[in-house]
Length: 498
Image (cartoon, rainbow, N blue to C red; front, side, top):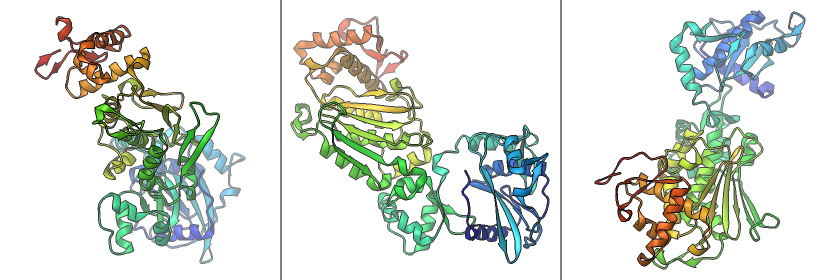
């Protein structure tokens, strides 16, 4: 819903809107023109126009002279206005689609009665009133269908309307922006010197859409700015449930929690601390021979880092009441975030990730928090292979995405589903790095001695029988066979045609 505004906010809003040189695609001035059908068409046009103008809200203001923007006052009283015996606001709500938030407010300025209608920019489809879609052309309200270029642009922009552009807090002073957002960490992450002076700092934050000028004066803090740089996410009600929780359990069940911590700072601020904390809680270290006999934790750090970053970036922020979570057990780790994946879980490794939050993903990459597009899951699978652990498991339970990391165990203890999944992910990894998967690479993946090549052949046969891999060169002898993931077509790998 549109927030209930106090008189100070409305006064500041009117004063700022009056400074505009003329009406726009997102602002309409009126004196006493209160025809309900005209108001409905204007609401649709202005909501659509706000999207075209990159604005979060649009406004109709009564009591302002159109040409001069002088305050002349109005006799319009929205709460007392009716259409056919029905209250005006209810009548408008029933005729506007899709559902749209708007609210009337009133304020007295210099003895003049002013009415403001605040309208949210549409976030789903172009808004229609009475079944007809409208748009602003200059200061006029027109039918959208008569302006196909505007309509195409509007649809294209609506595909990009997302969480990041929403408002976490409105009309914040310069001082409060710098108090609520950890701006030094922003510059530190970008490896830039801290600018000299408040104006330069605010301008830089604005350039990355972390904050924006508020029409009522001051600044709006975007959801993007708050989720990444908030000193305390709980200060922003819209995102307070999006803090990341880490829970460590005793044993392999959820009956007894040993530790639980919620990270309150924005993701860019707390990310390294989150990863350090998880790794400190990971079960005891052990020596991994393939890793040059160095002491490593039970879960590869690079895998944990990439999966936590994915959980933060790719979550569905429209799902309320829940946020990302990491659960640590004696022999596994589960990383869960709200929102089903936009890519099939079987294709995480080879397909570029699709995110609901592209702006967030881009800024996290610039902060060196996540890898470049398409390499994160590759690194997860490769690090697990070097660790000689069971392969990760990706699932998409209803409304969420979950990844399992498993502690290292002897090959003799891996069951058939784990071996088959390991062969499949190995095939995918080899495919995307333009290398054939064969008996030798499988021996390397599982740490099988050359004299035990028959075991590798058996594992490959299991994956073939279960339909996860295919033979890429069926005319070749058994020793020369190369294998592909089931979805891959015949193609060239190196100098060999598969």
